[in-house]
Length: 279
Image (cartoon, rainbow, N blue to C red; front, top):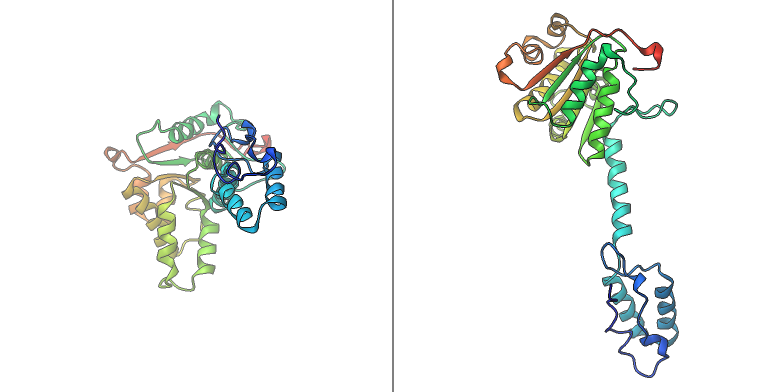
């Protein structure tokens, strides 16, 4: 790649050392963006010469020219890393330092819970018509693992994810807002609505109040209406869920109207496999 320094303040200076006018080596040019790699030793040498031989005005001009042509790949890499770190923090996905992240690759299920694995994998790869996936099964059958795996997959695609255990979510919500009319509530709900994927674990296990049910129903209802991707895990039967969150939301989640094509319900008969190290 030709150096962008064939003309400019470096080569235009007369009566200076020949090294001033000699072309910069080609490898000062970033192979990705073509900008100058400021950390290259040749640039350091030119800076020293600018300071040693050039006047104050020239030195400023030289540095300004370098800055305008600099490679920004490293800065963009750092910015991407910063955005990824913030997205991971906002996603709130649990992390076990002993077991490592729970992903599709770390899944160690059996034929008994292959139904929920296949459904979740199809969902995240866009091979499912519905935009809401509900996983129903007993404690420890792998539902939480799959929610986390789906969340990590979406994070890897640069998308916005939020994972919450519903009972903990409501406790946090109550601690944050003193009453249901607090100004921040709608902003909080709008933020939830904007996420590309919402993962709600243990829905129906919370000690529900009318106020808490209202907030959960609003989150799920918003995503149902707007076609937002959501995965819900619960241990509840339809009757138990109706007692916890009411009949209206329950009828949607448990597909009372199968013609709507917005919810896929998968009930697994797998028993707990936590004694095998799963979750």
